[in-house]
Length: 404
Image (cartoon, rainbow, N blue to C red; front, top):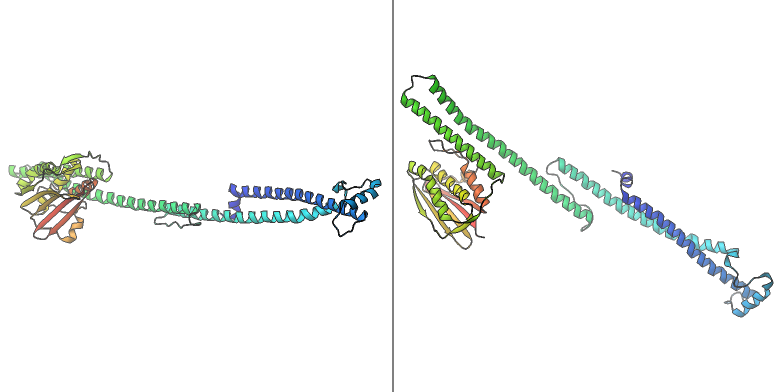
């Protein structure tokens, strides 16, 4: 938008123009009034001077009443005295114009200067606002756009520019977050569909074999049926955990926070995992301080502990698990450690990614989502999961919560 458009399409310049016209009119009126007053006094002084000169006074002296009275006596027959209206004198209009023209010119010039300066400043503000508008439009259409700061420090335009910059930064952050979420959804659905397709392929193959081959032995049929059931169990757990993870990612979980015994949480988790631990011949050594309590959602926190225990049972090749509770002045900690093979340091950052690990569980009961679910649950409780591992010696998972 050029200067003409900015002038036409905004009210403020038109108001400035109206104020300028009013100032010119006021300048003319004030100048005319002052010139009238000055002309009246000057011409009245001239009348007094001429009467004094006619009455015997000197032209260069200040008119005195005596000489003015003598002059009035001389011109009495012409009805001329010092009360004669100045406007009747021929010099009146000349004196008035002599005062009016420079005074009106000065006031008009000041009005013109004011109008020019005010209009220039206003056009500068509009120009900055137009640039800011263009940058905002560009930021709406393009990622990682930058908003420049315009106007004087602490000025309104500068503050608007700063607010627009903050808004654009948030938009860019939301755009990045949205792209990450889209990437998460794509990879999650790809991995999930791959996992389901694998189980479906096994189920389809086994059911085809069961329906097409009549000469299969009873033992073979039982084995194929068990494999079908195991894959159905795997798919069921996969879908359930995928729904949980989706809810956690969408912040659709309402946690019921209440004071709970963390020892009770850990005991419930170990009890639920007991069939798996017995099947893998893994012993559990609990060291639980029953006095340690924390505001938490018992059910969800129990699930987080279960997932870590199951992860160790599936992947650590361990024979013993230790579950310990302890606290200090700042932190409350749930520690779960195993005596398994350990985790390479470069793999630790990948532990909490979806489908990041391959299960050694021959029952195919591992979904690959449990670690990610545990991390989100712990973070929702204001904590973090720390991992310490050494190859050949085992791994230690710590749920660390800052005391409120």
